[in-house]
Image (cartoon, rainbow, N blue to C red; front, side, top):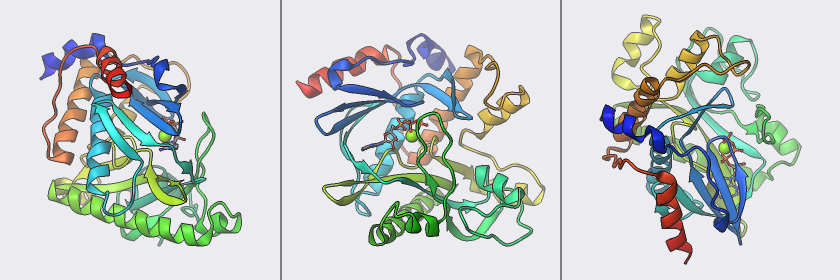
Length: 314
Ligand SMILES: Nc1ncnc2c1ncn2[C@@H]1O[C@H](COP(=O)(O)OP(=O)(O)OP(=O)(O)O)[C@@H](O)[C@H]1O
Ligand SMILES: [Mg+2]
């Protein structure tokens, strides 16, 4: 496996130029192409952390994209989603949605930005949690901590439900539907994760409207939008004050912090060996989370996508 992943390094997908798919919008990880109400989401191998693109990881785009597709399929009975087709392992063809102005963040445990705000004595999007909670603690119940959708390059900011309604960012009836779907999606995610011995810790959903109908867009339960921990060791480690075993981006963040990097200044160098290790962690996580095999073929991702997409739109 290690060799296979190392051999893929020269072929990583860092940049795309599929102008035949439409007008390009570049996110940190995905390149979006827009044409006639259709959005082609191409997930690249770019790795971001602290809101910066830092390196590329072989097969990461495929892992992320196929994980999103897996969850979109599993949740299609709960809410409509933007997927029309997935003609390539790295590509989703989606309906262009009119996006809501807020992102729906759900938390089952106290981690990441939620923990940082709690520790600093702040409320979480207006929610006052009980005093004395510890880092990584399971919360008494799921909480919704929405954030605004910031413009490109800016950080999203937490916003309370009250503010969302008072500012008319989402009207009440739609908001209630959105909230209900959000919790239903998360509960299903938790149940499915539990079957695989995992805790779905937190996640972020982005909804939009298609012909006035609430539609789940963007990505779902991927390792760029969610945290997953191993259930088996969670309690014991929590009680001993140890970090949970994590299947997400946290080990990368922690390595970066150890190199004195938190988003500013020169980017630490990722050796090929390190990139391959990260890739293997992503692939393992894919297999555990989806209970599916991961099909990795060494070769040019860029050329394969070009071929598949030219066929698709022909
Ligand atoms: N089906 C869709 N219709 C309309 N907009 C969508 C759809 N799916 C996702 N989007 C939006 O497309 C934009 C681009 O997404 P992407 O996640 O690739 O980049 P980004 O959010 O700018 O950067 P990053 O997520 O890397 O920080 C986001 O604002 C997302 O909300
Ligand atoms: Mg995004």
